[in-house]
Image 1 (tube, rainbow, N blue to C red):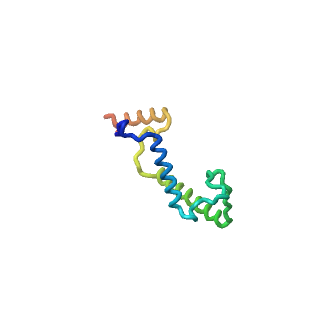
Image 2 (cartoon, rainbow, N blue to C red; image 1 turned 90 degrees about the horizontal axis):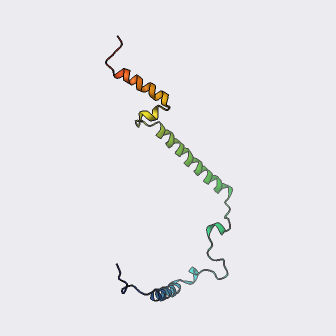
Image 3 (cartoon, helix red, strand yellow; image 1 turned 135 degrees about the vertical axis):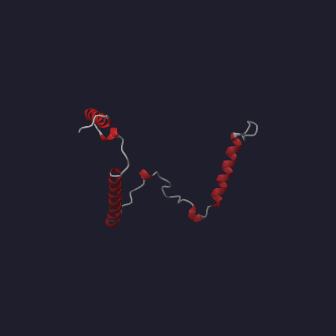
Length: 114
């Protein structure tokens, strides 16, 4: 960790940044520099839309439909998996849980039906 006397002053840092910016601008070739009459950088939501052809739209929709179908298959397979479920999840309401408890008591008791 730097001690306060080792840290550069903000003015030094600013001058270093300005010098680096000048070096970077000099390193760019003419074809890499932005056009002076162009709009320059714009956020993506302000850029004009690039319209797709019908074929490109169909390809994209086909891809999305395929992804959704695959996701549905995965979801179905996950629901039908043989992973053990807890008893509470299998028995939904309280009355059914009470019935199951009573049945298990009878099943595990020593009284057996002849």
